[in-house]
Picture (cartoon, rainbow, N blue to C red):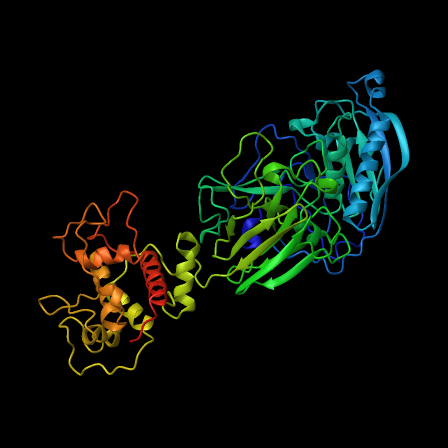
Length: 595
């Protein structure tokens, strides 16, 4: 979905551009409330181990929905950290001195090592000064906004490029259960509030510095329908009303829910923030036709190890990356989270990311266990572009990206056959780009399909129509009169053709059988009716019994799983595509049509 519609502005998302990277002094004050969200529903599961974030008031931002310019990002330097342990007004000096300064420093070192790896050694963090037991008037009952602002003011700390204030206080968690809080200013400076060190500290400090560097949270799409991708509704929000965005829902990413490990940031964040060398993501551009790509471990170091492509219809950008237990992904890329990850920019904010999982049904707990796509699975964008995972090895994965001429063919189990109809010149669909696979097939459309399948032969229709209800000016007069001239359809006894009626499965079997036998002269189509019916709802006395039995023997129709053929049912457009595709294959296996 378009970035503007997919992004709700929560917690004043930090938007960066080359202009915004120029230093602008930030006020120590922050907005105490978040702006109202857009029409995209965003959810946070209660209890999710998380870190909170806000951008400083007065920071230059792009207009909402405007793209983030990464081409000119040249952030390089060491962020000097002022590390402070704070004695809150309602906490004792003993409680404050229990804060492990070594653990706090280790968190900053772990963060520095991480962001060095992500930025090709351009960005790092180091402790420039340490102050312990600073007495503050802030109390543990206050929210993290208030505590951060109070301590900042009392310290007299003011942000400047490549500086950060990191505060540790003697509480197990911050307000609302947060494991950390960050306030970003200009993309290289910010403030971080942490509770006393725990197993989460290294992850959360690195996460908060991700905010300082301009990233928001790694979110996931979740839908009650389980659909892997969803488009926008005309009135705003998602076209599938069961869908929402789960904040922190991508736990294969550092910017997702807090955990003990520190997984690599996703390729969409990498691209947005201008990290790495600049050659890690292959830009395939506008997807067209069928293309194959090789992915290497995203947490590795290969060039072109991930692929991004633009959907030709929605113009949305998708990123494909391979998560293997390598480097920073060693402990997270396991089981169902080892495989091909599909992610986009945008989520709860425009600076977030959004993972698109094989199933978007809400998952229980805080950490999803099946976030990547496995060999043999196919992801389909909401406009029909398909990503098939061909294989996954211990070092690489192969993916095939193929586009569809119809924006709705992916909804059908027969999408390959529907696409074949287009590429074979048998169907162009509707002007709005749809094929409408579940719409019933009209008798006039059936005439058009068979005429095109025959190669649109030269034919001059008669001046007088062979059917009383098909005037010579009818849109499909040429094709319908051709059906009559070839003996494919004689119409009804009353002289009508009834072009707008839905074609039944029994009438369709007669048309296809006559096409093969009369027009293509395939002898196998003139087989005698079997003594025993292949379908439980047909007998040798049934109308079109021979033709329907031939459909089964020719492999054009297998009927339903319950053994029925349901001759009086209407044929849908998706079923017709499958029937004609199989008919064409049947002809090829029997020497081809010699009409």
